[in-house]
Picture 1 (cartoon, rainbow, N blue to C red):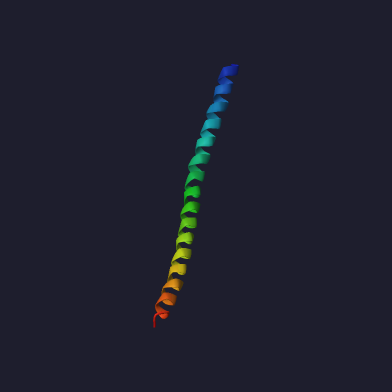
Picture 2 (spheres, rainbow, N blue to C red):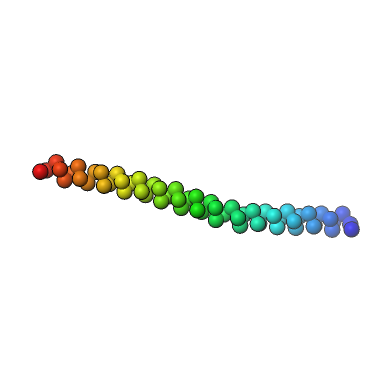
Length: 60
């Protein structure tokens, strides 16, 4: 095996491993972002629910 052949095999394995890592980590990243946004929305809904009854009590 020549040096260029050996080098080409190593780069192919490197690119293959990098692409597999990206394919695995990308959905994990999206799930984390989705869950964080969901939690942030829940927090804003709780604040809205607390503020609405307080506004209704003031005029009466």
